Length: 90
Image (cartoon, rainbow, N blue to C red; front, side):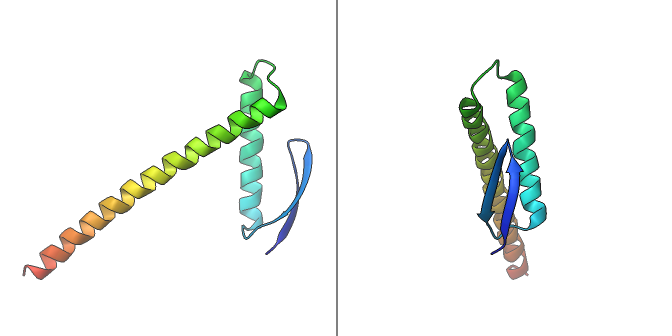
């Protein structure tokens, strides 16, 4: 598993992950951008509170994407079953 050293939100972090360099960089960039957006709107909130809001926002994005994926998988399964029924009815 590759190890990474990144600088994010004023911190130097070292960690290992199966994610590739490009994905790690995309994640770092997303966190930095979202934090900056929250910081601009945050009316002098502490860094800890901003990070909690950031985590909640990312968790919400993940849950929404997970629900959309589940709905799409369900729809694909429905369509595959229809195709199977059409194929066996001939």
